[in-house]
Length: 99
Image (cartoon, rainbow, N blue to C red; front, side, top):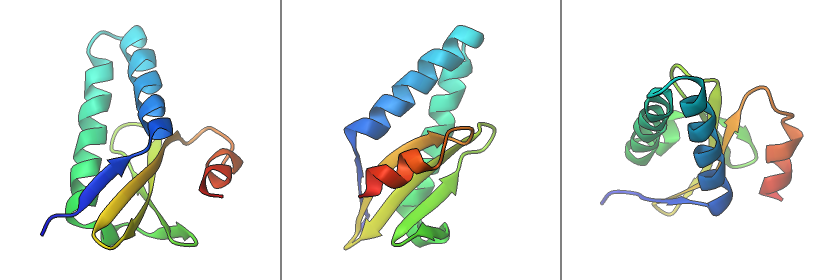
């Protein structure tokens, strides 16, 4: 049975903001970013325990080509995406979201 992936609204907002920023930099780059996010989410869906636990029960998957991490929790065949986080930001921002 495939895992269910739930993307929280905050993570969706981060994806949308990054898409807009990349698309302003170079036409089509935002779509490349979305493909990278999609590829990462598909891998997380298939193999959620592939990525390391970085805090309590939360995993981190790194995007290819873009300096972003996907933070998620996996339990009972459900993956919850908490953040798609730019690596230059203060890590306290995503720690606070888990509380």
